[in-house]
Length: 305
Image (cartoon, rainbow, N blue to C red; front, side, top):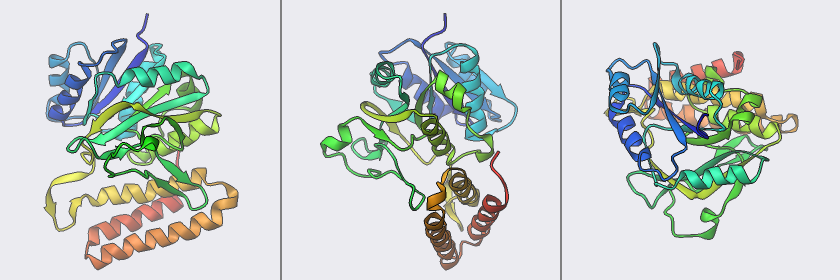
């Protein structure tokens, strides 16, 4: 008999981060789950170390780095094949409150119309500052936003009230296995960025709602997937990040913008892309400017599959 929940983490050359997250998970009061760690083509031996030091984890290994999307799909496919009721994507750079799972499970148990849920997420380094308390989407302009990002939690009731949201962050994304079977896995072409928005929109299009559950709390280091350790001529963020963000934003807009909003979405995002490109020119970030424009070109000319 499979356990109720599968928690999927992706590791890529980051043993210490993954170790800290797994040790945090070991303190949870809900125990009816398996932890599936996907080693995403690591070359530092971290996959073997996780396998040796955490024998209760299910470790799946990929010979290449398949990105956030491909790595998580390996874990989710395993979970679907093995009959878990719920599946949770969890970043490998988080710490969790011991009771963070119960409110999420309870929310899904209570209402079959809810397809997926997320917790309240604070920054790891300042546990009173919000990283994500539910995200919104403005379909008129095509803007994905996290309104409470970087705000100090001063106990306002709206931050601590469960609510419907427009999309769920891939940092902590719990979904019904039956819903995932219906809408499909992450689209691997994204590699990373906007894949969570796309999956959220597909869940909503299938007739399910997405809920934010603030009684569940975790803490996120954030930025580990796109920042370099030392600042170079192009700053801390790699040009590839800007390429992926530009391309994937366009792919997501092309895929999910309603026909009536195409004129306003196009005008606003043309201004947005031009503004970011101008900023790179102004700061003499030429590699980023090239990557940004290449991302725009691929987003416009290539189809998301």
